[in-house]
Length: 508
Image 1 (tube, rainbow, N blue to C red):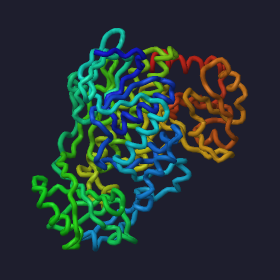
Image 2 (image 1 turned 90 degrees about the vertical axis):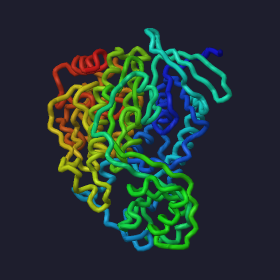
Image 3 (image 1 turned 60 degrees about the vertical axis):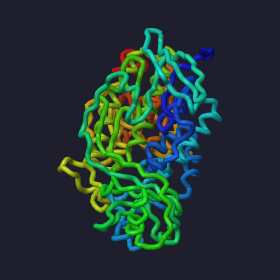
Image 4 (image 1 turned 90 degrees about the horizontal axis):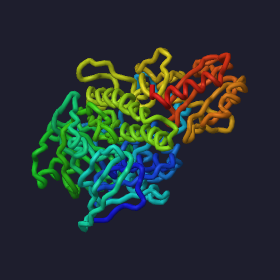
């Protein structure tokens, strides 16, 4: 038995998109972690592909957005939907949103992309290792105990070597069947299983067939082979998803695929067949003691809103700064309770919205399966609001019927283009930041003795976030607005200190 001499502050279990992102977010906050993943390497399956604009904003904060976009270059032009009786006869469907397609540059500095999980995970792993993160693949967590002084864990390598290590906290990013969640006895609720489906991952040279009709998803409206194709590299690698014939033998699938493609003699190499059950399962608790559930361990949802991995990455972005603040003794451990208070309601809502969206590409943004009102798709990505947690709610109105980011506490800081070309989001580093208008001299003086940055913005900015020229916003390291003071108070230093203390010392 070996003992870890250099103990990490946080143990991350799971080396998928969420676990690797957790390691990077913690590293950015100056927190040492060790990540263990029982698989010998990153996922060989494409799985998640849509990396939404919020995730790309977070990758921008890490300084890795360009590397992610480079990995996604093969599908840069494959953003469209298509539909038809076969892939060969399919036509593109006009892309529509309930409120119309916005000018993206007015709402985000980021660019969404399609990057298959088997391409993105190696990128995140490489960056994490290059930055000095302790990332160990082929290492399995075999036991752990949540003790008063920390987490005592036992890990085992592929060659059987056993090591004991201690950490202050444990992040469970160990997937939908999470052994850690099961060990803790955390129940799940939600809509449950919503049917059966199968993903057939295959190689076929379809590059010329789809040229000029490149697509992200292509819906096949064919009674003999209904389903949808997803582009993995836009040329050779594809996934066909269907709810029909999940129990077919492997040797039956090439014929089905040729029917759906519409080319009877095309060579096909079936790589893998993955039956799965779309469903909604949300953990009743995201935290037990020193253990935190993230990603699929916390919330399983259907893929119809392309939100699963993205929501998990937001989980660990929310958690990382809080762990850092507590470990630096800049916050009371009660702050960690706000992780569940904030992320569980949002995780539930996104999972529920994913569950009621139809898989039909023609109607998925307009109709729900049970008449539950649909959130605006952009609001679902950028517009969620925390109502309780490490923030001071001001009772202001908020809707998910459209993107409603106007400075409400608990919402993501609105993107506002600065004179130097940067976004207001780029101002948020690893500490709190106070943003004020051009009459912010008193606020700047108030921040002098506090652990935060100060930024004075131009005269047009305050009105966009519900402030008078003398007001200010307090923004957390995760780009969430924590407190809004619409006008300049008599004693700005006292008000600011009280607000920060309320959040960091009591977490509410």
